[in-house]
Image: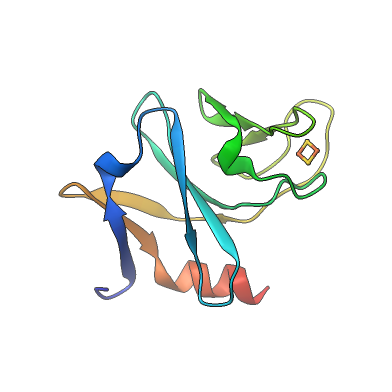
Length: 113
Ligand code: FES
């Protein structure tokens, strides 16, 4: 752990178009996605529809399709796309020197909400 960012692992642990999960201190699961364009996003791992595990969905562009009922969720905003409505909290995440860093403050704020 360093400063405002928490080191949660190596970037190579997430394949392109893949995801991995981490557990927050309160037990909430966070999904970290890596897109084909090599961008990183972090969302609470609960679909806004019926709590499907977004980490098990298919990543396409900057969105993920939920594995349960195929809602498409924006990875950048956490909002449901198309005609569906709902939103899941997002958390700032970035890569630095091959490590994945997640915002400590945003994570605490997200999980306290
Ligand atoms: S739980 Fe995700 S689409 Fe229904």
